[in-house]
Image 1 (tube, rainbow, N blue to C red):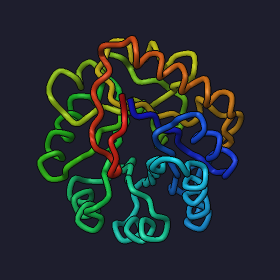
Image 2 (tube, rainbow, N blue to C red):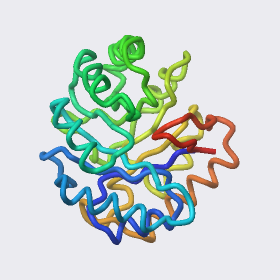
Image 3 (cartoon, rainbow, N blue to C red):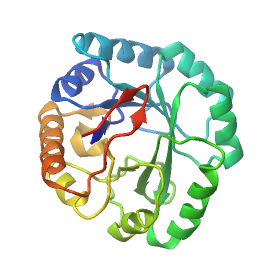
Length: 242
């Protein structure tokens, strides 16, 4: 299982996350987020991921973007050496295709904010999008009006089951995951990856090293015992997952 800790803002948190065995670290480039970081700050944090893991390939470096221009995303990738994009806003299929055209070597995760009332429309969009863009994975987060993630609200299990009813890109589950609920959240649905931000924080953007370690240990334990967890796919140029 691919495990991502998102919304990282400090070098010391990067080191703790890497030591705990995470597969990916997320950097938020959305100015409206409490976990926003600049390109200059991200460059330093990406460098810290390499220093923290010298005996193996570095973790995936995921840039989270919300309604950003394709050229801005392209420039950010060039300046920070991100290897995965997470597109998390209201972007159209055409806009995502343009982002992919400008960044063809960068893996793309498309995030959707979902609830029972919009799941059918969301699934239709996912299926249309996969015809235009080779998605590495789809991330499902809880729908909270006016918010673009990091809310601590969990996704309705019925939504996850509906997603898994036919073959689609690997599912990354986000939304309200923490050390206490990550095992149960993945118990009844085919999950390839998991993503948390607020669930391992002492404050917005400030990760708690002990909670990060507990989260990853709980996820790895669930990985061993849960037959619903799916096999790894290729993302960010490396094989991640179980």
